[in-house]
Length: 456
Ligand code: LLP
Image (cartoon, rainbow, N blue to C red; front, side, top):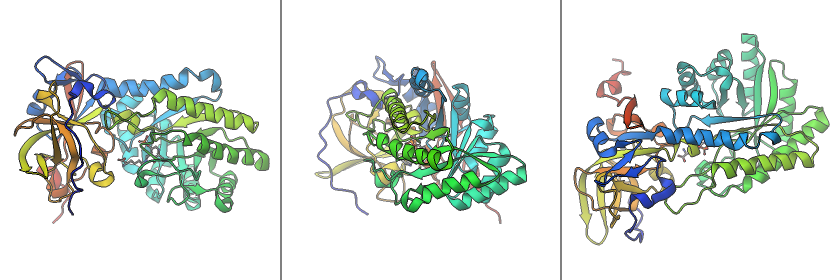
């Protein structure tokens, strides 16, 4: 595989302080030109803990969680049935993150038994879990039901039967939401579009499949259908299509009320709010997103004479993404005159597959030269045996030197959670920084960890 031809990216007169929404909340450039996050010097931290290193700004994580809660609370008079913010753990999850979710009073969306186990291990009340997955294994279903997961999102008729069986075995009635694919297209990468009909997720409206699924759920002992779920996609910058999707789902709720006499009490609109990866990206704010969701649910329900249900959102990226950065050391620099300059770092597609997979476009900087303009254009490549192992393609950067600490911004979501051991690379440590202190919340993998599961 060869890389795309160099893009005509111009060197950028801006320094780090001008990168706006791309920066974690407490990022600052101090007099010596070093980048500090959470009051911690990123150059010093990289030297002490080694790289690659994921760093999270704890204050930023907390304020994004608050922003979701505040956005709903400021509209509470219009939400008679209340709301839940269920952080989508697939974006980034470890014990420290579950504890933050717990402390900030959020629910947690878990996909798969491993995320469920993490949540339980960290002591989150199972009632606050929303369990997801388009093909939950019978074991995962058993684990969720027996743990007392608050809600399980049903993706298929067969899964409904399995949940009912597990509920019977455990002598409980399991609350479920049914996932609908509203047939709405959002403008994002095709791989992360989920609300269209041609999707492995959920129940399509076509041929009454969703309505029949709802009837099946209403008629199945052992499960209580508490509402409907949708998720249109991820990294959504134009949020207008949510109104259309909400309207489609509300239409289905109205039909259930009319034909079955059942008022479904919850509407989970999923996650998807996009973030700024480039300084000029203009994502909607958390408040506008919640505002649009509340307005649309209210309008679509009142038009049909329905009460406003409990509204649930499942944000992942818009909580974890901007709060996280990755630190690397520059190992080698290769100049190809007239083509491009490669800056090779001590990580790559093993800690950030998003550029190779989705052509993600990250901003980066040299942590010790953060006050200087980014006068070079370079391609930041990883250390893996693959030409597509690139983290930032044709990106503005300060003049790089071997040994510099390179910061990749906006890597808090879907980088650690999609990390691999390609080429036997131990996965990076994770540090939380706040109030001038850094604490390692997940240690770096060791070579012994790599071998630990091998038998014989
Ligand atoms: N709820 C459901 C049912 C989901 O499938 C997802 C994401 C979310 C919530 C959270 O969406 P968010 O707020 O983070 O956009 N690996 C891709 C993203 C895949 C998203 C999958 N589902 C990436 O790196 O861009």
